[in-house]
Image 1: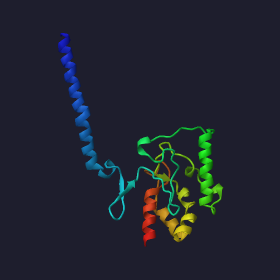
Image 2: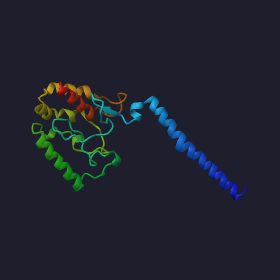
Image 3: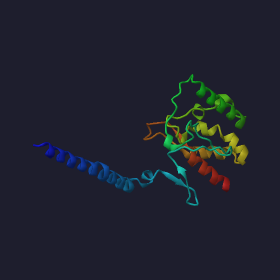
Image 4: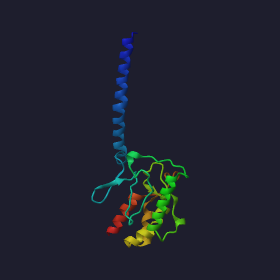
Length: 193
């Protein structure tokens, strides 16, 4: 076989794989995903009662309103395109200062909750910086602040947290968790009544 024949064979093979792997496969997997799990394929978007998209249940948000539940700290400000963490060690001065600042702010916002009741996931970053979930304990320690600001009894807020708590996957994997966006959506509905 001549060099020209090899070259043409390589070009044809490249075109075949470009079409197969770059066009057909992505279109097929997208079509299957749209049929089998359309919500997840479109970003697991959540809408309010008016039908307006308020966010994705897969990406955390920075809730700053003290009358809402707050999620985990994010060193990337919940920017999905910047997913990741600084990977600071426990002795890194920047991380220590950020943690101290957050603890100080927590004490100002939640004076009725002793510092030893503050769950660690409220002052630590997740690996992606986008974690939308907190532990049920992290939601429960925020109830006194939210009850004081909204006038909703703590018992109703505790029921709300229990109702929005998701168990372990398949009963085995992961931990119990509360999606902060879903919890705040339910809280907003409760407040509107």
